[in-house]
Image (tube, rainbow, N blue to C red; front, side, top):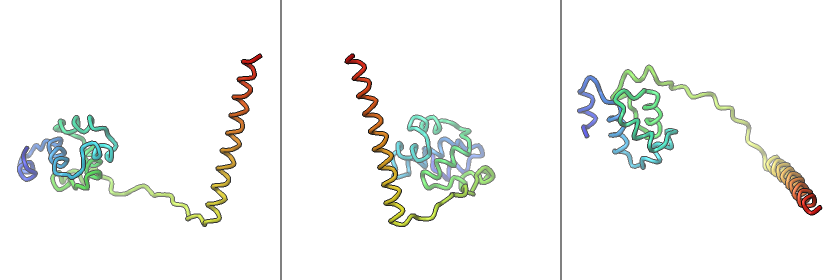
Length: 129
């Protein structure tokens, strides 16, 4: 497998080979890398075989690996969106609010459980008749 420097010297760089090299140099397992990037392990192997791997896929692996592929592919910068979508964070709940919310969900669960048990009883009562 060629080194990153050798890969950079080629004008037409095999993007899959670069990905494969980055994966090999990582301390993470291939399964974890693929999962972090949002793919399966078999997809990772397919991506490593593609010479013209799209930059958006390479970017996802870069985030999963903590590797900046723009050092090898400077043209990739135009394809990457550095802006993250605005997260809508709510203000933290107080302890009392959390207890109230917990109780609300617990009561809802109990109500649904009672309805379910009644349905089961009705079903068995119909079968007995």
